[in-house]
Image (cartoon, rainbow, N blue to C red; front, side, top):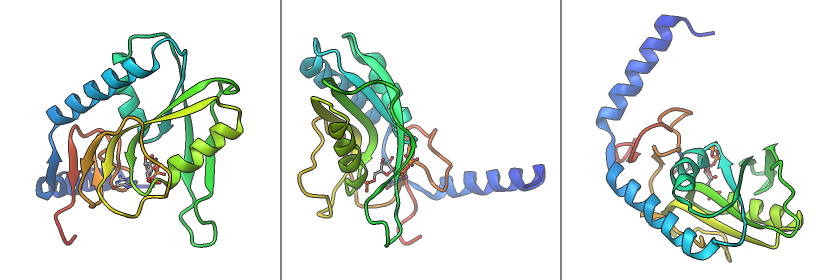
Length: 191
Ligand SMILES: O=P(O)(O)OC[C@H]1O[C@H](OP(=O)(O)OP(=O)(O)O)[C@H](O)[C@@H]1O
Ligand SMILES: Nc1nc2[nH]cnc2c(=O)[nH]1
């Protein structure tokens, strides 16, 4: 257990680190991105009574920004799945919480913070289809610019393109912290 002094020191160190980080996307640009995504989703999914699922943890913030801008009836819940990143387990999903809504016959909209290599969303989409979902749509707040994406996975509602760096803010973490930051940040290059 960390003492109160250790927690304060850690908080100060994180604050100092943040002062040296690069702001890649401003809070205003992110708000504009959420508004654009919601507009596109409203146009496409109105009248289909979709099940909207936030992909925890990161998707919590993007879903919290997008869902209140949706103007049609929908059901809202979440799932919590993360990728085993060890070499032996490949892209398999580790489930921490499965959706509590029956997906059979439903259109499902997954909302996440980032499409990086796409393994997480590809596996979650597969799981939803196996559970009987009629169709799975994907909305992401950000998408990383690189050529390492899994084949056959593209966001139906793509967010803002970010450079191929480790980023945080808007739901994304740096060692568990900074998910609450508005805007997209990155460590100084080379750190
Ligand atoms: O496209 P990929 O390369 O699969 O990476 C993207 C995924 O990684 C992060 O989740 P993570 O499993 O790290 O958990 P978190 O949401 O709790 O941060 C993020 O929220 C995406 O779900
Ligand atoms: N926080 C964070 N999580 C990720 N998951 C996949 N890519 C990233 C990234 O750049 N930052």
